Length: 153
Ligand code: 4NP
Image (cartoon, rainbow, N blue to C red; front, side, top):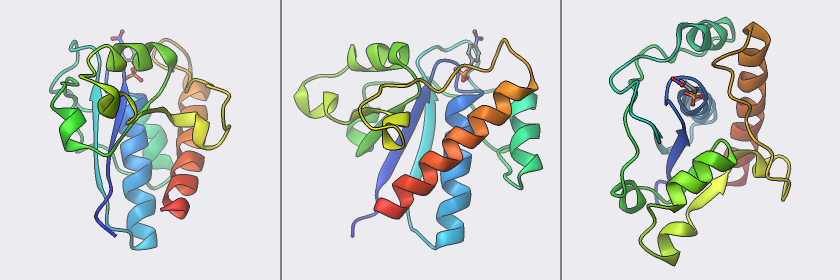
């Protein structure tokens, strides 16, 4: 099997998509799966920043270290570099698909939670303006998604 290349996209690239990248990286290592992973944001306000401290702390409490990740902006070149692009909500979906150069690009874009809730288009809720519980919920949803996707490879 060729090494799968997966990109995760949210708005700021400091909460949900780095958590997705971290959860996939952690579980892929545990399962001995060779995979290429990255994450990006549709907004550029946080470019260069480490993940939100609250997301880092939640991940760390589960043994997942995401402190090395740095935010970057999604670009159309990402359609060439990745096989699949998982977005966290419908707004991310619209923003990414707007940049697609054709059907091949568009077909790579998928809602993350459709992996565990097929066809429901459920969002990974943005935890940025909420409390600690929101970050735990994001961790849980993304770890379950990672488990499913990696087992299906
Ligand atoms: P993320 O969360 O999209 O999961 O990284 C957000 C981070 C920052 C902002 C919004 C959402 N912001 O408005 O700065």
